[in-house]
Image (tube, rainbow, N blue to C red; front, side):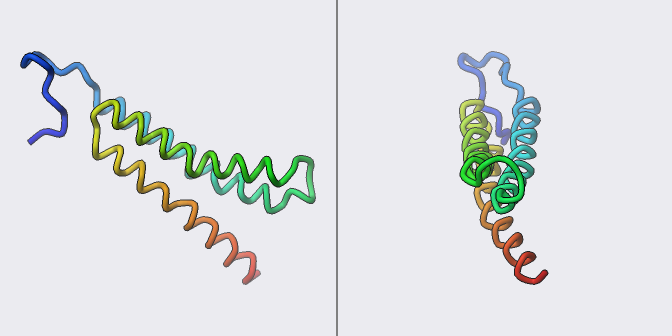
Length: 107
């Protein structure tokens, strides 16, 4: 059975699941890169201009907000699998925060 919902009235479905998944992948890349970047910059905020609060806000917004945005976009487009994978990205902040602190304490 296809994941794509059938069009109303039995007509041709005009949704583009490939395009939606490309958008979701781009948003996922932003979340995967900007979250750790903002967190690291927040930890290192004493040595350069900018406050730690601004960087941690960027990190939180990217690591948590972008996956929710991606899940919402995928849900509206009718792609449940992409929405679930977007929500899986919510585990990423836990992973990178633990790794950053383990690396800092070891080195």
